[in-house]
Every structure is written in structure tokens, then in C-alpha cells.
Image (tube, rainbow, N blue to C red; front, side, top):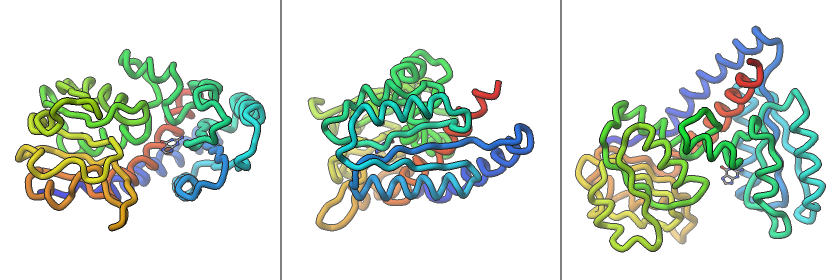
Amino acid sequence: MILIDGKKAAAELRAELKEEVAELKSKHNKVPGLTVILIGDLTPSQIYVRNKEKSANEVGLKSEVIKYADSVEEKTVLEKIQELNSDETVSGILVQLPLPKHIDKQKVIEAIDPSKDVDGFHPMNVGNLSSGYESSIPCTPLGCYLLIKKFESNLNGKKAVVVGRSNLNGKPMTQLLLKENCTVTITHSKTKDLKAECLEADIIVAAVGIPELVRGDWVKKDAIVIDVGINKTDKGIVGDVHFEEVSKNAKALTPVPGGVGPMTIACLLKNTIDCFKRSQI
Ligand code: GUN
């Protein structure tokens, strides 16, 4: 079994992006800017945002974090987004999720200018991705896609099973695999026989948020398995894949941590740079 090293792949991608930022700086005399809005004091969100800021600085992006208390009014956030939409120094805007209950997530997502939507959550980007047009692509599925492609460049006709149908992961992942000519099955909590579906797969992407759901006997020999899960359990952080069991069967597997996670952040930087480049045309 080959361990797909997301940490290494992300470091390589960041190094490429750093060079690209330096080139853009000398060409345009400015650098792409990422602004993250963080609402409330949820610890995981704070950690994610800190890591995003650190990585953005490392590749030479202009980076800013705007913090609000949990009690902030929706209107204040929407007004700030409008301000950022018309700020030329801001190439990408990300509002860290989850949001407090009194703030309408969809309203916030739709307030972001689609050309600055580095998460790829705006309906315009969702539609463009599913129609095969240029768009921002959500960072986690984009990271999974790049890991899969790095390992196996030709996915023509492969059978892929995506476990989970979220807007964040499952659905955009499906679009990316379809574009690569995979035959894709999306499975979810109401799927009749998940094990049987997974046993058909050349590629499994598990993004369902259930600790160690995918077991060793669910995986065909020679399958590529990508684990998007980050689940807190009594024995620490585990993925959606039973690592020990699946590592005995799969051809290649991503670890948790050190698999998809680092690629997600590197892809956010890539999306910020891509938004900048599109804005300069
Ligand atoms: N919270 C957890 N993952 C994400 C993500 O990809 N984007 C945003 N905005 N918030 C998140």
C-alpha cells in the first residue's frame, strides 16, 4: 500500500504558488489578497483560520483576518462583504463556517462577489462547475482531486464512489471526477448497501463525517482511497476510513491527519491566486 502524502504534496504546491506570486508581483506590481472573516470563538475555526493566514503569508499573499463576536448582526457582516467586494486589493473573500444560528449562511455566501468566492460556494460557481465552465472549485474536493491525479493521471472510465453528498465535498467531488470521465456513484446515509457500492470502486472518496465507516472488507484490492473525514473520538482524531484495515487492501490511501487537510489550505491559496489572475485580464 502506498501512503498518499498530502503534507508533501501541499508543500510542493505551496512552493509552486510562491514562485507564481513572485512572478505576478513583478508583472503587476501587486500581490493577490485574501480576506477571511471569522465570526465567534469556536476553537476549530480559529485554528483553521490561523493556519490559512500563516500559509497565505508564507507564499507571499496579502492576508487579512476580520474577526467578529458571536453576537454580530447579519447586516454588519453583509455590509463588510460589500466593502470587500469593491476593494481592489482583495482578490479572495472567505467567510469561515459554521456561522452562528442567527446569520443566514446562504445570504452570506450569495453576498460574496462570485469572482472573489475562493470557497466556490456561490451558486454561480456551483453552476459553472457543474456545467463544465471555469469557476472557483471548493478547496477540499479540489485538494482530493489533485492528490488522486498526482497518483493516477488517467482516470478514464474508472469507477468512483463518493461517500457523502454535501455541498462542501460530495457534490463538487462528483463533478470533478465526472470531468475526468469517471463513472461516479454518490452514496449517502440512505444508500441501501454502502459496502456493496464501495466494493465496486476503483476510487473511493469518503466525506461523510462518520468515524471509520469504510472498513477493510469494503475496499477492492488496488482501490485508491481518499479520506476527507476529521472526527474527534475517544482515541483521538480519526478519518471516515478505518485506516489500519483499509491499508491492508487499498493500493493507495490518504492518512488522517496529513492527507487531505494540508491540501485544502494549499488549494485556498491557489484559488486566491486564480481569482487575482482572472481579475487582471
Ligand atoms: N469550515 C470548514 N471547512 C470550510 C471551508 O472549506 N470553507 C469555509 N468557508 N469554512 C469552512
